[in-house]
Length: 288
Image 1 (cartoon, rainbow, N blue to C red):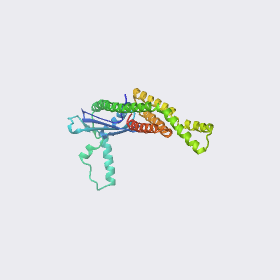
Image 2 (cartoon, rainbow, N blue to C red; image 1 turned 90 degrees about the vertical axis):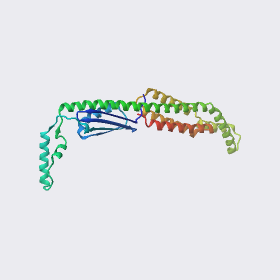
Image 3 (cartoon, helix red, strand yellow; image 1 turned 120 degrees about the vertical axis):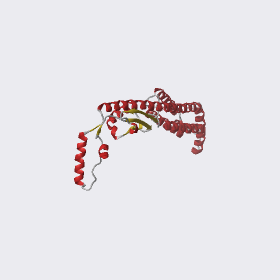
Image 4 (cartoon, rainbow, N blue to C red; image 1 turned 60 degrees about the vertical axis):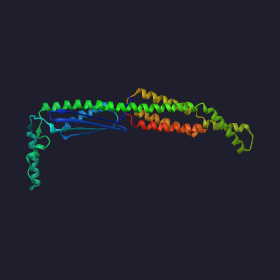
């Protein structure tokens, strides 16, 4: 399955400490760029969340926001952390010596200090389990969204591959005729330039130029690259970088075809191929 690197997912659930919410947003990037924006009180969950995300997502710039809405928090048995209070008291005394005129700490200030209000261990385990479940659900939703968009991207690329193949097959029978017409024009110009009817010399010059404008190899390589692109699309998975490489090779062959075009039909074909390749490259930039 081809996946886009663009997607969005959200999930939330009640926890012992309030409503826990997840948001996942991803856009295209060269590698995996994971940014975790986790509320301070949820920092212990960060390693677990990072591990879960990296197991499912291999590429893209992904932002994960995790936060608690404590407005709906229930009455939970809570206690003060005596060790945290002792540390805070020591810091306060040290600060008072440095700033004698500073106002003393208020109770509200103490309660807001990280770690002062201790949650029961059971609640921490419940919160972790809920976070793991929510993250897994949000990841499923994100991956599904990326797969839906990836299917559209793959279809769009497939259409352009078909168009390129059709255009190549249309122009391929014209190559011998174009080459013959080019050789005839070139022979006439050579005779005029050389001021001689020496057919042997003219034939030698024509052989050199004919080799330079023969595009059979370019057309064959274009067919091979298109076949590889189709195989890669069928294979699925994280194939964005491979498709990008194939698009570069297609563009290279289209450029060579344009430089060796011996007729207007071949030049027009090369220009159309370059346009289609550019459209493919734009789509490929969004594929994982």
